[in-house]
Length: 67
Image 1 (tube, rainbow, N blue to C red):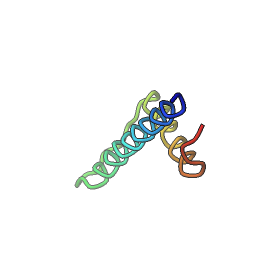
Image 2: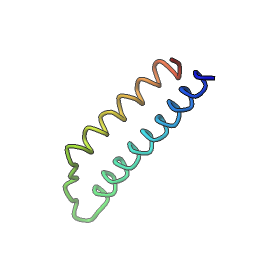
Image 3: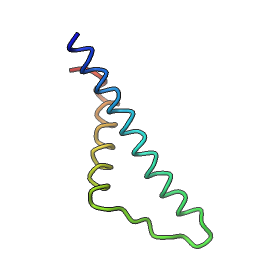
Image 4: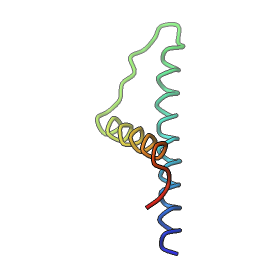
């Protein structure tokens, strides 16, 4: 029972990381598609969360969901 709960938490965290990565990717691509490209600015907090998201996504890809 406890393992099932942890696995669900890990799955939800994975989807949140994917959504965060897609949000930043969309903002970057939208900036490039403008007629006059704008500089993509990101705060240090967002940079930390994006780095965590990317590392978590890569970890899940290579190891999978397990405790």
